[in-house]
Image (cartoon, rainbow, N blue to C red; front, side, top):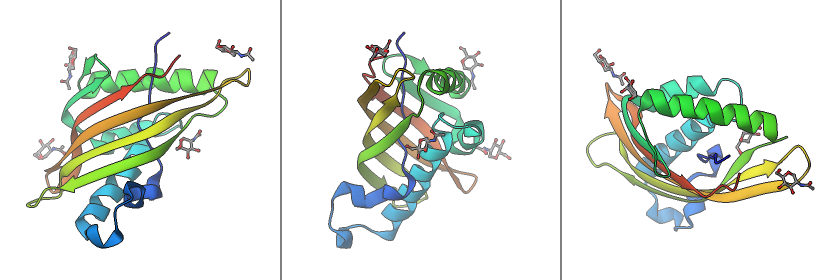
Length: 160
Ligand SMILES: *[C@@H]1O[C@H](CO)[C@@H](O)[C@H](O)[C@H]1NC(C)=O
Ligand SMILES: *[C@@H]1O[C@H](CO)[C@@H](O)[C@H](O)[C@H]1NC(C)=O
Ligand SMILES: *[C@@H]1O[C@H](CO)[C@@H](O)[C@H](O)[C@H]1NC(C)=O
Ligand SMILES: *[C@@H]1O[C@H](CO)[C@@H](O)[C@H](O)[C@H]1NC(C)=O
């Protein structure tokens, strides 16, 4: 079974995770990072209601990949539904913690580019803890005055 997953979450950890001097971080960076990390926590499919977060975060025109396979808005959502089923049946708890975040806001709108890395996993029902590094690259675009993720590239070697 080759599954998984992992967008990253951890809402408030935000830009401080980058390790940059606070004086080099603009309010635009903070706003984009807060929106993004909050969105990721919301659509991370380890909890009921993740679909609501998914609909709010991803643009209908989404281009995505999870390792090699390519996805669109509909098919990534189906994939996440499978992740939710697996994570909630096989793990007693499944979480993600952010290791690094790089945020580059666009100069002319609410969008930007974001790269993050994290570690995901948790204990299986038999007590064995499985964790793996994970990374994601996202393009955030302003559509109708709001932020949406229009491109999402996630890679992990989660050993399930
Ligand atoms: C996504 O791809 C599937 C399978 O190719 C297709 O049926 C569906 O219409 C596409 N959905 C979107 C939103 O592009
Ligand atoms: C889902 O993951 C987040 C981020 O790691 C964690 O804070 C939360 O407790 C998890 N929720 C459940 C229901 O496991
Ligand atoms: C728990 O299950 C996993 C997956 O089947 C297995 O790799 C691991 O060895 C098991 N751990 C124990 C303590 O049996
Ligand atoms: C933006 O607005 C147009 C026109 O109302 C609508 O068709 C489209 O679905 C909206 N896009 C998003 C991502 O909400």
